[in-house]
Amino acid sequence: MAGTRVPLSPPGTAALTGTEEVTPDLTLAPARPGETRHALAARTLREAVLDGRLPEGTRLPGHRRLAQRLGVSRNTLVDALTQLHAEGYVRPRGRSGTVISVPALPGPARVNAPALPLSAWAIRALRGQVPEAGGDTFAVDFRVGQPVPELYPESAWTQALARRAAQVTHAHPHDPLGPLETRRALAAYLSAERGARVTPDMVMLTGGTQSALDALARVFLEPGRLAAAEDPTYAGARAALAATGADVTGVPVDDGGLRTDALPGRATLVYVTPGCQYPTAVSLSAARRQALIAWATAADAFILEDDYAADLHLTSRPPPVLQGLAPDRVILLGSFSKSLAPVTRSGFLVAPPDVLRVLTGTRPLTDRLPGRLDALALADVLSSGAYARHLRRARGTVAHRQETLVTELRRALTGWTVTPVASGLHLYLPLPSPWTEEQVLDRAAAQGVALSPVSPLAAGGHVPAVLLGFAGLPAEQLRDGARRLGLALRGAP
Image (cartoon, one colour):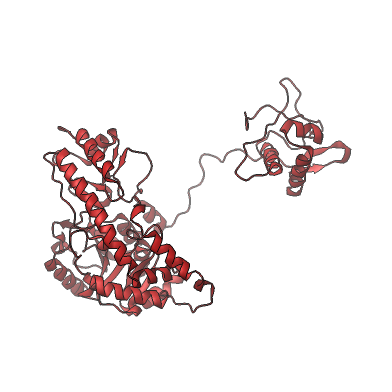
């Protein structure tokens, strides 16, 4: 069989002395894509040297005989040996033939290898990670974070890239905030569609919400300071805040959004998703918006507003951003990862000028601007109206899929509360007592259905619940998934 290792010499032969010729019973290794015959022959011999099958000092047989053993032409073998000679693996000895000139690699590293000297930041950052969706294959995969490729405006995006491709090859002035043309388009869009109070000089382009969170956390937080975040919340936000060494306190969420009466007395930052709370999908009420701004003013704190899923509001126009009420206290974060990804990872940050001056000063140490081509294409997609047209189509598709899933789940899960969401790409399904998240996930998996638990998103106590990402699944799979869940969760746990 190709690639099988066999003894170098027949059983019972004497050990090599370094001057004896060996007739290795070698077989060519499996070829790699695009690998030439002489490169394959060279790799086969190189690996035999490194793993000890051809010890140092071994004299190889003549070219013709070794070529026959490997099943290659003599010229191919000569080319391979020439390459190995240049690399130092073999050396020619005239009439004495070719000799292996390097020892085998040492054995595996010792089991008790020294621990990596990780920094405190790295340890905290690793501790805060939550595994992404993926892994095992299921008949119906409701896990959140799955791509929704049929919702992406591929045609509009590729046309914009083609129009802009020639421009990025020409010299252009460096702008640490991103191309002015793109920032103008974003400012116009956010003012018209999201109720923001923003000018182009308040906009910074980012690689997405996570990179913006990391930059802001590094600038404003350190050990001894306090940050607050909704609980439960987006795990990446809590991880970015906690990685700085600051204390992070969770603030409970209910049907009205963030419990402003539970905000800590002092904090430097608070992270919120007021338009569509992640993961519960509720919106922050008007009264609590006012209370949150009043708290931030009294605490001299900044509000990090993640405008999550606002572009995918399904039932009506989304509520305006909090930033429009207090542009001096609110730093608005946004991304097109749900509505344009995977074609772009473009995001943005809207902040007071003083904050942007600090971010642009520290950015060269940790981050780079998103690609100029993507930025210019984004400007075209926004200003041409292509993005708005895309969203209208996407909202219709997502709303129809949610309606299908909600109808089927209500039929399959009698006694459970299944509530449609106003925006976003997943359902939040609270579990009736005495079900636990682990029980539901196990039962569902046994029926071929994958769900996402809420517990990894919660810092403290929370109502047991699971998430069902529905936007990427066609109607027939949504119906099949609901039917399977009905079978899995029938009766008592």
